[in-house]
Length: 116
Image (cartoon, rainbow, N blue to C red; front, side):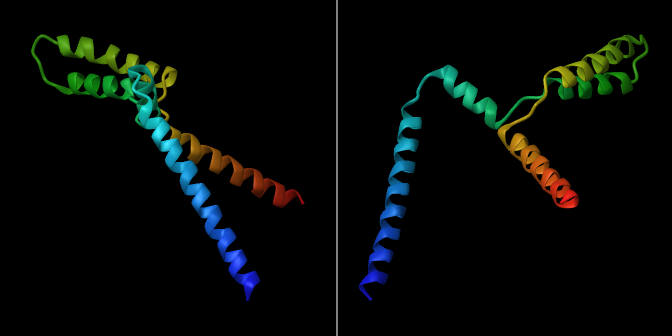
């Protein structure tokens, strides 16, 4: 009986230590008030996609009927520029990187199990 209590106490201590480390980490993160750091952390959580926005505006301008044709002349290059920006600057976030890593690991495991 004392061994079971001792194991339970050790388990509770581990949980307590983990909670304390986590709260210290959150407290340290709250102390960061640098605007550049906050902007960088925000960009990791929510990345902007300028290429997609430019493509959407280009398609809207291309399909809007207008007698002078200026919007058609502007819409096409905007679509092309949007595609270029989409290839050059991707809007990947930490969540996307985690999903891709998980997918790659599962494909490696599948390959490994098929070989062995």
